[in-house]
Image 1: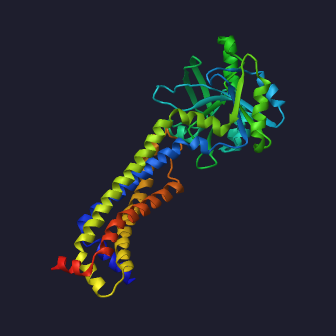
Image 2: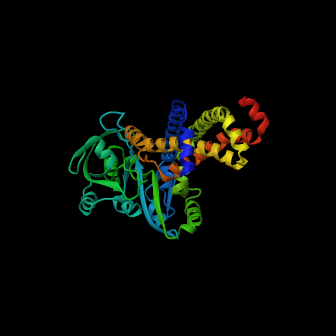
Image 3: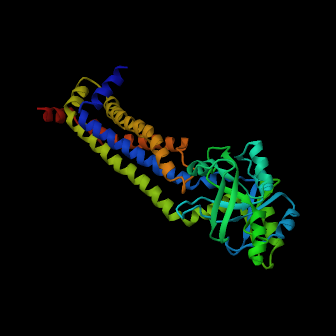
Amino acid sequence: MLLIKLLLRNAFRHRLRTALTILGISIAILAFGLLRTVVSAWYSGVEASSASRLVTRNAISLVFMLPSSYRDKIRQIEGVKTVSWGNWFGGIYIDEKNFFPNFAVDPKTYLELYPEYLLSPDEKTAFLHDRKGCMVGRLTARKYGWKPGDTVTLKGTIFPGNWDFVVSGIYRGRDKGTDESQFFFHWEYLNEAMKKTAPQRAEQIGFFILGIKNPDQAAEVAGAIDRSFKNSISETITETEKAFQMGFVSMTEAIVIAIQLVSFVVIVIIMAVVANTMAMAARERTNEYVVFKTLGFGSHHLAGLIFGESFVITLTGCAIGILATFPAAKAFGDAMSTFLPVFFVSPRTVYLDVLASVIVATCAAIIPAVRVVHIGIAEGLRKVA
């Protein structure tokens, strides 16, 4: 208890300098935590992927369609348990700035493959039985004030025209990392409209989602599917859902790397600030340390005082920064929900904050501690004089 009291007194002997250092550390930890949370949000789709789901798409590009007849052949592949399908719709709500992911899917099989999308029994029944029904994530529903029974009109971009939907249900995520911003409606509704307005675009599917019996056989099942359509008019590429999501992340990999580098630069800068503070404190107290040596205190005692003071200052700033990260992340997440629908401070981010603070505290105290430990009593007493 006496040691803690001594460390606190030493740390706050120069209150203004210590307060400014703690403020700098807090801001740095806040920035570091937010940047790491952005990186985590970027990979949220990858993290939420299931090992038991595969995605089959056109081998050339996702923008090219596959014939709907492929689903029957895929069902016959050994190891495939469930087949669902869908199209990226790309609809706009009122204005282009109102962006959210919207898909035409097969409701029954899609909900079987994605049990993390939770609907009440009544909402699920309404969605399955209403051809014009749609299922909306609660983030999007809350943003636009939608509720079950409302009619929502999307302006088609890929599929021109105004498309009316009835909100059958508002889903919530089973897991914290589940995307709650998406909009799903019946693929048959889209297909029937295409038969009337653009027959050449009917019976075309953008992607197949497959549930497999054994995740350990994912590579074998994917290979069997792609071999089945080799040399056909539309060859396929089948990959795990995680690999499929990583394909999108890799398109913006340079941005992610830049954010990661900036987060580490922030830590290096604050390390220099804390090191400067500790160097000044050690230099000012040289006479005290020499007196301690004269009284018989060992080098480890003196080093312990310096490291302890560094840890008190740094961890105080760390604690304040972590506490500030949560409300800041919530505000940032609400503002950026359109682009980063899954945005929350994970335990891993908090652990990284603490780890970064420990590294900063340790590195900042090394040089002052070495100088104090190696200073001679005679030399130190001359400086006192």
